[in-house]
Amino acid sequence: MNTQTITKLLIEAGIEENEAKKEIKMLLEHFCKYTEMDRCRGIMPDEVQLSVLKEKVLERIKDRAPVQYIIGESYFMGEFFKVSPDVLIPRDETEILVTRAIEIIDREDLKDVLDVGTGSGCIACTIAKNTDAVVLGVDISSDALRVALDNVTKLGINNRAVFRKSNLFEKVRDEEKFDMIISNPPYIPLGTELSPEVDKEPKQALFASENGLEFYRKITEQAPLYLKPSGWLMFELGIGESASVKKFMQKEFSEIVVEKDLAGIDRIIYGRLKK
Ligand code: GLN
Image (cartoon, rainbow, N blue to C red; front, side, top):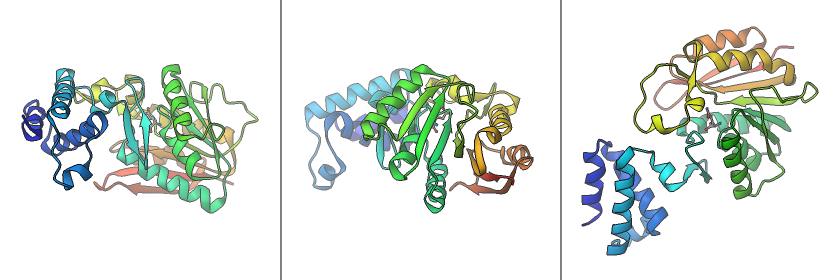
């Protein structure tokens, strides 16, 4: 038994080769304390490490749960975030949204940010950790909020990112005003077929009615009430949703910008409240 034969088990179970190799590295590092540096130095994983790796690979294959749920952590913008099946796994695409948000917050010295549908808290925590802003994260799921709270502690930013159980803006008070509202809302149209891995993520974090647009519409309609003058609204976008979301936003927002991801897909949209 070696890493190649174990990697083959993943590939034979239908996991794409590059993904399989990436997951083997992640499992070795997390469960076996075997790093890329060891590999570069020509050190091979020992029998004990290989048997642990195989056990985890068999667990991964058994019900095709995402490797991040098995590890219990997911890497996002320089940090490892706790994840569980109660939260969406942070995606690479979301880094585009957070990077742009941080840039705007720094440039304009913004102080108050609201993250709607915070999930694991990856957006809220990354902004709080890398700017002078304080972030309020809201989510409808208490289970997700427990994970977000653990992440705040893990990152050592306890009073900088705070969380509240709220269905969208329901528990945000009228007098609370923010410089920026940011959201990576559920955006997959109801009825869309999912890969076995995505199917293990919380449905509440994935699906939206109105062809995937439900939360963009609701958040865009209510955001002006909770924004300071010229406040920013920023969203991550699902595939093919940019034109519709832009239309929602054009009513009350100006200077609207759409940016693409590396695959050329419109991935984020942002604008500021009209004067
Ligand atoms: N805000 C979290 C993220 O971007 C969760 C988003 C969600 O559950 N739709 O990963």
